[in-house]
Length: 313
Image (cartoon, rainbow, N blue to C red; front, side):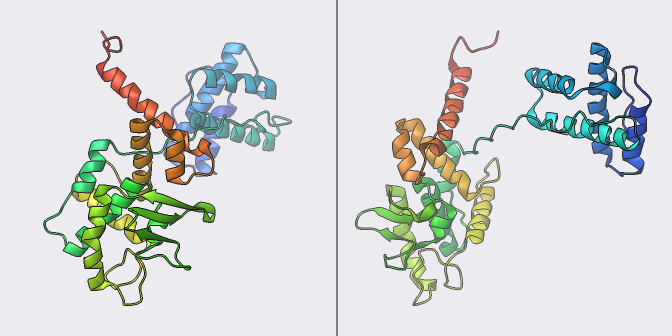
């Protein structure tokens, strides 16, 4: 059946269009429901403003869209609604009921870019310190190092798998244990130095002797798999996902989430946006500023939970 009936007095072409969508276009039930709700909203606006839908102008439609946006309708919902309206008038045009489509050219406001997801400090530490008694020692050591370099150093996954044990002209990046730092080749072939913290150095010390047991004699990569060759980004994602599940993480964990966590937690502690920009290897500080929003969200949660004036009566 077409979606639920419209609540307001309506012209006959609205249910006819829904029937066309169901029979001719074979739209799914959920899509028909969305279209029905969109047409109900359109008809309600027309009834309220005493507008004949067959005579609707682009200007009037634009005013309605602006009104709905001001009223809190999300950009994605507006886009779906406009799709239904546009389809209706396109169909009315083929039926020779209207001379033009007043919805053509109307676009919903752009949705805000979602903030990157980051783990809490407690979850990040839990993931780094988790140890599976059943895990193979080599896998366990490599998994721990992966977490320490992604979260402790803020590396991208491509930067991580590109690391070599020693520096060379052909190396994308390498470890400098004497200086307790990494040389990393980031986006745009931009090289940067990243300090190694105590936990990362401990993870490296534990991994390097085990690496020698499985690495091919001529393999320069820091991270190697069971066959002794360079670990790939896809393998990192799979190992990290499995470790997060075993550690009881509340959500799917991927490599870039640990980079986001590194940046967010560092900014919360230091407040130094320029330093975070340099450590992440961002060419533009505007890219780094997204983490100030994450930091504000953290502060807002603390305020809501703890401040007497924030507590609801």
